Image (cartoon, rainbow, N blue to C red; front, side, top):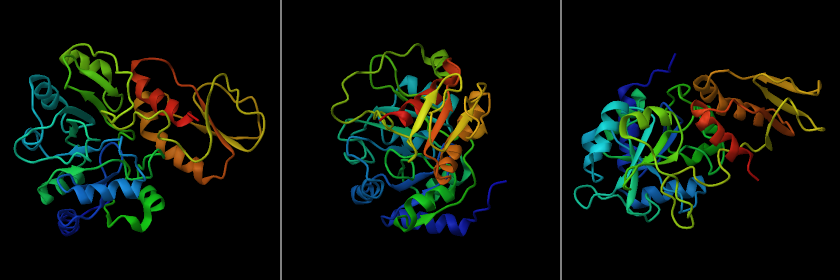
Length: 317
């Protein structure tokens, strides 16, 4: 059951956002660190609090297609995807509009495009509606760390650096949104996430390959080689081959660990349930003072693409 957040709390949070404050709030994916997306100084606070590099853009959260259309140059593919999957864990990267509300260059890593989405969580929707502004909102944690899926994760990670935290309970999807660029001739999958590639391609056709050159600003968050990483070293292993020494925890799917002196955490066998629990388990593992985390390699397949992406980046050196 979700904690109850009343209209007074929502309005107080909305006032903070309108005055340049930072508010952490729940979405269906992870908790976001929100600021007025039209206020460059407020956005700069997000980068400062997160210790985030300027090459990593922020996703802008809106309450409707109509608000999105005032920020970006809308097209037919965006219309079809938004009508099907919004509100929901899908971010559309489109060229910024020269009319209406202006998105500061800091939000978009100095690129002409920006990612937009409508979150499905009722608290997020109510907050954006009450503030009456688009919200720039990356995950509410230090850059490259494990994203928060509860308000407590935000409190432990950012503490007093956030002006207000809205507690909407655990996030249901548990990993970040899928990000697609619609600014090219053909769509580009920039980040796998809460909606599978197959569902999206069924609606707008096949994606082209991700560009190799990521020297300048990234078109999407989550494109750094190391990301979503616990403090504890993480290894993806096969056939239960965990590290030979040290106290550790093994996230088990099917294989049994080859050592008997370690803690074992059984993981869900379906990709959606696995994704929903992954970050919570990683936060718990960090709190357990382990020397390492070993993760039984999940199955290969399109439905597991987002999980593999998160584990690969979490394990990067």
